[in-house]
Length: 332
Image (tube, rainbow, N blue to C red):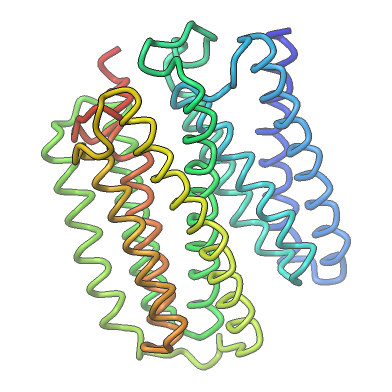
């Protein structure tokens, strides 16, 4: 059965790769655009089904809910990204946006595949995770994180179609640097304080420069209809992810009280989860009350992506520690 689970997981990863290239080719071959986008969506659907089966089989083999370590959470994250895109594509004409969704899913598959074999193996739960609260608390959080990542990608698309290319490039570089810090923290021997400076420094400086350049427009890229479309998608993803995050934080408090006798202990990851919640609460507030321009809201959504990245993966690799840390795998 383990061979089937590995084969299905690999199928999902390969489908993300093939789907990505089909979407990329659709940009260059306009006559085949519709056919290639449809093929890419079908390939992603096959991958989504394969990953669904892989997660189910892993749970059957482990005889527990299959969400207990970083590798399994990455499978859930990729599943949520693929599912989110397929759901959005049914309601919006965003076929080529699938290239970004595939790139994100493929990146997570690669990140997960490079984790130590101890993460891939099915092992007994540590005592702290032996609780019915695990399957109540963790899945909503992982799905909300995936939706926030998708909303951040949609925000990049909004910046592109509104002609804010300078801000887009700055924020893209910021996300790349932040992700690089996490990658280095997972697989290299770079000191933690250097990685923390890289992540936090690039995030703060990049966000400031991104805000500062939102007024710089390149008219030839402007497509108001598409910009409005991706603005709406950004908001929709946040409005679905936000209640899931809220539910995850509340159930986390209940689990903490059950396990440790306190609802909140200001553990670093708990604090960052709260910071993530506040960042998206601010986004929703600004959106509803129309207190800033749409381009500025896109920057806020991308900052939310950075905060989510730190909450989900940063504490595992940047050395912040805490009770929720999976540890730094480079030392294993």
